[in-house]
Image (cartoon, rainbow, N blue to C red; front, side, top):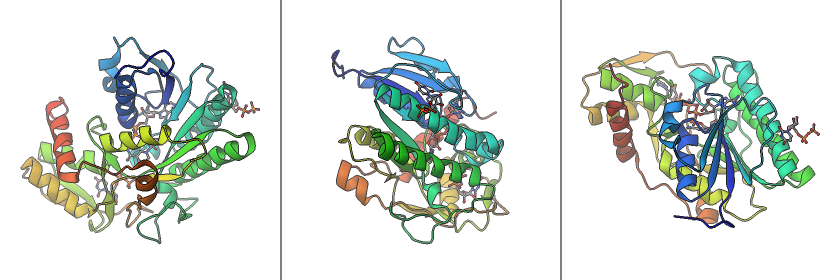
Amino acid sequence: MGRNYFSQKRVLVTGGAGFLGSHLIDRLLDQGHDVLCVDNLFTGSKRNIEHLHQHPRFEFLRHDVCFPLFVEVDEIYNLACPASPVHYQHDPVQTTKTSVHGAINMLGLAKRLKCRIFQASTSEVYGDPSIHPQVESYWGNVNPIGIRSCYDEGKRCAETLFFDYHRQLGLDIKVVRIFNTYGPRMHPSDGRVVSNFIMQALKGDPITIYGDGSQTRSFCFASDLVEGFLRFMDSPAGFTGPMNLGNPNEFTIRELAELVIELTGSKSKIDFRPLPQDDPLQRCPDISLAKAKLDWEPQVQLREGLQKTIDYFANGDFVD
Ligand code: NAD
Ligand code: UDP
Ligand code: UDP
């Protein structure tokens, strides 16, 4: 779909070389916008955006959002932050800096440009939740000093900054809380459960279930999530969120392992490992707000989305 001179926007996507950012950029370019992708390539990869290098409306800038950024754009999506526990725990101080300093710099940029800014927050702000499913009004149960805190508290502080820039300076903000999302372009050694299980199944290695596998997650396919991002960003000013986006169908990790084994036809056995500290026992979004405000709900269910993700990993030169 083409856009004319007046409806075409210059859109900044931080973390654009990552899994979700690269899918978002594909959609923004399809809509006719001009996209600036900013990424320090910590967990993202040039591979995710290599199909765009000849694209006349696409630009890549290698930059760390912890440092100020002076560019001219009409809209900002702030996605820069490692998302997998393995990666965000690798350098936890840098993780907090990315969330907090990154938010301050991107909010400062939005303030100067007087432009709309979107924050990719997370269901992790709910911690190990004591209410189920999680609604946006729930304040969360987060350990401030544990191994997940760099991510959880960093994202919570980023939300605080977004809402204070909104209240204090009138910034036009959109804050989304993303629940577990998966799909093609996840990093194969990312450490998250879907990529781990698929890679293990394809290689015939043991499937590593942490704990007894009774903990639950709700898995959203990337294309559904990105559709939610775009609808939210186009919603009226003043509708700030925070808003949950995710798939409300809940599975145990053991069920996920069994489904991956079935879909890959793998002979992998299950290997039970210790449950990491502060691993939430259950997680499922209440998406009533997104349904009511955006007329949004996921279209791709787990079996179909997993098959597409398996095809990506199986055909992508990832398996030796
Ligand atoms: P990802 O790791 O694939 O993408 C994150 C991107 O940010 C990477 O390209 C990485 O190189 C970049 N980045 C990291 N630190 C940076 C820095 N200091 N400066 C510039 N770039 C930096 O992860 P993803 O799944 O695509 O996650 C994207 C966003 O969505 C993250 O903010 C994450 O917290 C959020 N989120 C994702 C999920 C999910 O299930 N995928 C769930 C909740 C929240
Ligand atoms: N900032 C930026 N790009 C801009 C404007 C600001 O990176 O175009 C950064 C700036 O370096 C500052 C941060 O955003 O550290 C917050 O900016 P703000 O104007 O809110 O705060 P101040 O500069 O007054 O501390
Ligand atoms: N998990 C697992 N095996 C793995 C990777 C993860 O059993 O190889 C579990 C993990 O302990 C958690 C769930 O799967 O309970 C989801 O983990 P992930 O790292 O994908 O995301 P989280 O929702 O914990 O941030």
